[in-house]
Length: 394
Ligand SMILES: [Zn+2]
Image (cartoon, rainbow, N blue to C red):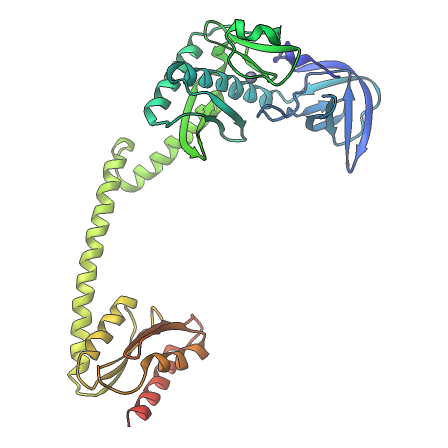
């Protein structure tokens, strides 16, 4: 089994070891060392990356049967003495997120008795799943505040090794599957947990915790959070987003919610007003068409949406004996309508004319509507409709 140097020193960036084996696996190589500072993907924390001799380490994982650590490299590593260096920026980010998770989980447990049942350290955000009846913003705010107090208290985080039987006596409630000697992570006067991950040496190194979204996840509650550098980046990105929105609207970021609400209300009011104006205009256009005295009315408007065309056609069809086809060139929408009591079937007629042009639609014998694709020629279809209606109307 590989000796894990990160177990006792999470801040070890470079190390010397013996390469024991190197086996090709597809285009990659799997290297086994006698000792390593590389963290293998486990416990919700992703692997380290870095260099082994002149090879890039692209993945690190544990062999399931004997827990040997395999370093996946892009080129072979010769057996014998080898120098390793981990990508520190990536490791330190993981240290901040992972230690932050211990703090946040402990805070939820202490304040509300919500245990954490799983942890995931993602590329942008991390999550914990809480076993709780419900989690509301107040819980998040209070747990975040407590965790940040412990961070600013800059408490010592100590690694110790204990036998499994001693855990209950130390106040560890978590059930542990692993037997024998366990690695414990203790945060001075706050929390103690069995864990194999990489942690800060003092809570101050976490920088800050920012809890974000809460989301119901089956029977659990998922809490998103970011720590340290990520907390700064996400706060900056939120500020830029809010600033851009505020500039667009012409207010300060703090006034955004009120302004957005106002704009939405104004938009709704304007829509209602436009709806009423369109209705009045449709009535007016219909009356103008009826004034010509024709019984078959075929008319295409340049503008207007489907609702406008429907309204015009409906008004026309209220007039006894009228058959009408009304369309909008802009919306490529057609309405076929006829007054009650006339023979014929405008739905059938609409399908016969629109379907060959790739159009879709339908309705009743008295009122049918449909839309044709961009490529269809609205005026050509209107001419066909006129011809058919005049023939059938005879
Ligand atoms: Zn841990």
